[in-house]
Structures are given as C-alpha cells and as structure tokens.
Image (cartoon, rainbow, N blue to C red; front, side, top):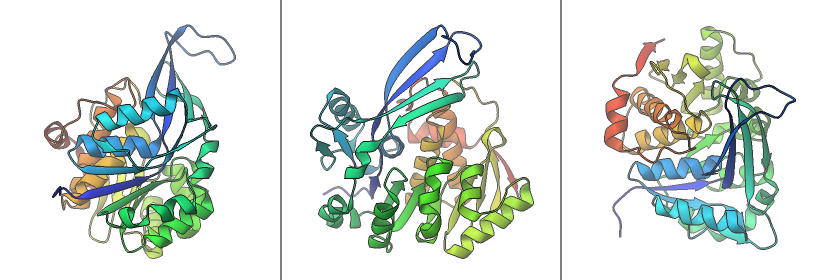
Length: 313
C-alpha cells in the first residue's frame, strides 16, 4: 500500500479548445490565428497538477463515450492521476470549454458545454463514498449542481474540504454552504458573490475574509489578478505577488494555484508558505501554452516560490 497522502478531486473533466490571434483581437470579425486542444476541466486540472507534485490523487467525475473522453482518461492517467472511478456515460458528449484569448494571452470570451455533469450526482457520490472518505483532502469544483455539491460537502464534512468556485455565476451554488469548506480560492468577483459585499480595497479584503472565517472557512485566498493573491487565516494575512510574470496562456493558472494550496496543506506548510508555493505553480502554468505545464516538479516550484513578493497585512 502507498504511504503517500491521498487526495480526492470531485469535479469537471473536459476538453479545452483555445484560440490564439496572431495580432490584436478584433471582436465581431474573423481573426487569423491558431487553435490548440488540451485536456482541461477545473477538477481535472487541479488533480493533474497535484499529481505532478508527487501526490496520490483519485479523480471522481464523468465523461462521454467519445473520442474526447477516451483521450482525457488516457492522458490524465499518464500524469499519475487514478482515473479508474471516472464514469463513462453512453450517448453523452464529454464536456468542452472553448476560450478565445486576446493579444495579451488573456481570456476574451469563453463558452462551456457542461450538461454531462448532471450525472455527477448523489448516486455516483454514494457509490464511491468509502474511497472518497479515506482521503486526506477532498477538493471540489462547482461543476456539480447546487444540490449535489451540498449533499457531498455535508457527507464528507469531517474531511478537509477545498473548493474552487470556477466562476462568479457558479460561485452562487456554494454561497449557502461555504462554511463547510476548509480552504477556498475565489477571485475578487466570486468572493463578492460569497460574501454579498463589494471588494474595492484592502480593508474590503480584510472584512470579506472575516465574514468567510465567521462562516467557518479556515483558509481564504482571493485572487486579485495581476495584483497577486490575498491570503488570510486566524494567524496570518497578506498579499503574495508574482514578479515579472511571462504569460503564454493564463487559463490554467487558477487551477495550478489551487493544487499548490493542496500540496502545501499536505506538506504541513503555513498558509503563507502555501500561498507562495501556489503562486509559483500559477507562474509556471502561465509559462506554458497548454492548460497544464508538464514540466512542473516540486523542486522547481519550491525554488520559484522563494522569489515571490510578500506583503503582510
């Protein structure tokens, strides 16, 4: 039996389709450029990044009985993620996420096709309950429906639960149960949804974190885009910023950050050290055209984390 600590990830698996313009993106027009397909899905991306850091990860999700589904299962398995409990749904299409990037390699617009996740339901969760409950950390994304996320979070509330809110719209489904989660990583807009208050300055960040801690969340990390990441728990607060970011593709940065937080928690790091490591993961993710930087290793990330800029609040 492996002595590695175990992580279960419950969430989305889909094929990412990214469009890169050769020059300035012109909305409403056909833009010369190129496209790239890569394995994606917030949950799957988190799982692969956690596995690349040497951890034992099991994925719980659904894919269609199609070429995309087979490709996603095969490629993710090669990175070390246990995909044996992912359910293949006949006559359903695997989830797809199509993003158009601008000339700065930031996302301009995206369309997600995720209807298949209605099968990521209570029956599936109960069937895998024993294996999931044995995990040191259980990570969710909000590709589950509101009812299924609430059911699963309550079922596993004695475990350390991590949540990725995915988007401001999907963050709404977690608002009423946010206190069940040990660690959350919303961006500024998603945090506003969770707290019901605007975030315009550092005082707002501190007040929002206090609200979330009051609900029961132990660790709060709020992404501030190019301004870095705000982190807060009962003993330390501050902002970690990545110096000299080189962006090739920003779409996988948040997922890599979440994976860094999970690895830091498994390794017994403080939240500050975890946030620095997670920021280094995000920096490495942005330095790759694919959603996942396959060159990530613990050694590289730890070395890069020492270069992160920290300002305590």
